[in-house]
Length: 402
Image 1 (cartoon, rainbow, N blue to C red):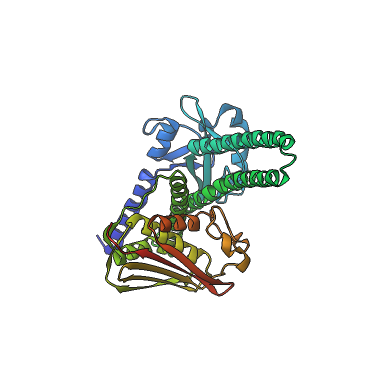
Image 2 (cartoon, one colour):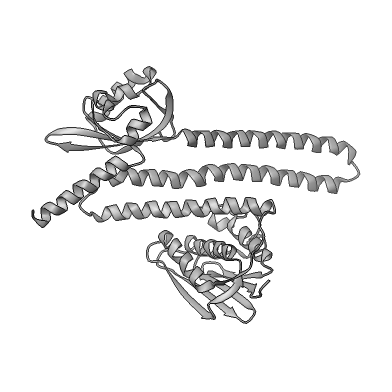
């Protein structure tokens, strides 16, 4: 067997493995809607035994009330086949073998073989996501009720505090801040969680379009990795903020290798670097120091990811770690957009975002979390910044065994 045959066999086996072991349901049908192939995930998703879907049509997987309209939509797609995502900004449902319905997102692609057109459908069960969206709506409703209740209490207090207008004005301002925080939370929760997931789904649905080591495959895989990294950072921020708010975080100081930790963080975060960006790292002094490893890890993740987000393409970011006597010093410098002078005093407040970063993804929690961690380790945080020049954060932690 020639090397070409061996490579072709390996490629076919790899593509078949991708089809068989994909976590998303994948169904291939012909122009009439007859199912000619379905992977195990699709069979489990719709409640069929192995091979049972091959005797079905696409309409068998559609709820009864949608069968007629779906037939027309399928015919329309066949007249103008093209890759597209279904389910965005609308509710799609599928039907299992036992008749139960469940919400789905579907991505369609097509290919031609021997003058016949075949349709590939990538199907994802979004029941859990829908439940989370409903939970967010319920939370917003509950918060709205609390706002109304608090407002009622404040109005009643108005009658009793006629001689304390300054106190009443302050209370109303706090009420407004609570309402604003509620609205910002709901907006961020829906946007920051959906966008990375949407990127992941789009990239996965495109993988099947490329083969033979096409560099586009690498491009989309990198996009997936970048989205996953962003989502992880966002989740970490929310979880850390919650624990800090509840007072459940305490520093645990042990002797650790700060240089090894910094290099580990850099390897983890390189996936979100923009085109041409690079991180220059330098360590000074001894490599080991006394610090809370998890807290310093989160501090570096937040500061470096911010430097990446707020810097343009082709810009370098500098990270320096130094063990200097009884001090551990961390310095992160970017050549980014900088911080407006009038907003510097609010930089470490929870959910605060400067007016010049409104078009950049973020939760407004990162620097607040960093400041809390630094405070927990009895350290200090300083920064210098100039608009359109860059920002430097310097964190000094005690290098002392507890």
